[in-house]
Amino acid sequence: MSYLSAPLERLEMDLFFGLSSLKLKLCDAGVREAICFSEACVHAAKMSKTVYAFTEIFGKGHQMLLDCIKQDGSDHHLLQKLISYTSNLKEATKALQNVSGGSRGKESETEWAARLAVHFFSPLSLVQDYLLDSCSNHKVLECPCSCKSCIKYGDTSIGHPKTWFGLFDIVIGKALSPLETEVHIAATVIPEEPVEESESILERSEDNLSQSEVKFESLQQFFPQIASQSIVFSFYQKKCNSAVSIVPYIAVSKTHVQFHFYDCEKDLYFLSQEMPLFSHDDNELFLETVIATWLVLNYRYLLSGPTEGMVKGEKFGFHSNVSDEVLNLYRNEIKMGITELKTENLDIWNGYFDQGVTFDASDTLKRKKNMKMQQS
Image (cartoon, rainbow, N blue to C red; front, side):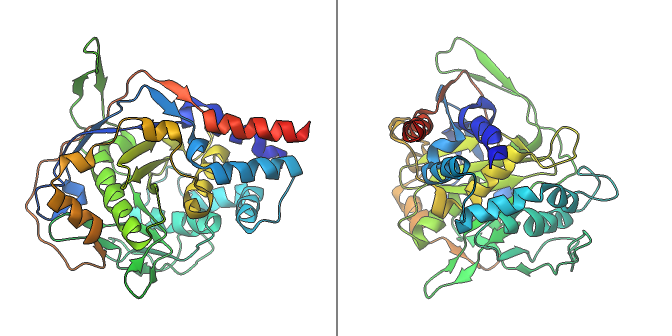
């Protein structure tokens, strides 16, 4: 398992794969009207000057990987998912790539979602059942690759008549329970066609000594939509399972994946960097991203939650941006399988800022130190 060592070290120590804490500046979650995710207003900033190692919140998963590398293998069912997938990475890469144009070839959003569900998310997840949004355009009955797997569609709607609402592109592990429709994790697939470019935004830093100009590109263009989906999903997961702490949400394009983590109880929001799906030459999936995705998909088993340092940091501010009445709606009234809601068009406010940071991998380093002590 030595081939996992180098990519894991980069997840542990590389700023490129770090998690940044966010501070909410403005949102329209509290207007007590149904607002579609795609029209949501969420304006946030990276306020903390600390970037956390990606592995900080995955204490269980990180330790499992360290043990696996030390023992040169493992028969643990979760690790077998990762080992099996990474052992056949070229085949998985080929299945994800569009034959007509490589990983960046023209393909409908639904076709790409189908490839992701069948050949990326399901093989890495212990919970393999998936559904694509039944309202998707250009539905395909079979996976676009040569495997011809049947594609499953269903109701992925979520929300309430007085909150943000909408559809997830992909849900993993949807199941009916006596009280609620439970979902393991959800994802948004970013359209391949570029949206109209947003204007650059200037925001003063906290010390008012500098300005940071941000031009919205790639996944960042969709931050308001994905953040609203992440927040609603976190509240719903907490409602279904009170033991859940921080909940991940996935945003994925044809070239990158990004992970949003929101803890609706502690009001903490962390955002990963945009991780490349493929290597520079497109020959193979990026192993660091595969490991990160495996951790996220299996978060209920591998996530340890925010570290002490994260909890002591600044709150995201969603709780203070809405009234107690609205907060109660998000905590208790969000449902899946909602009826269609009508909304008025609202202006979209995009916001996402990057400022000077330091790097925190304290818990990650403790686990690595303990491992070395055991080896000596």
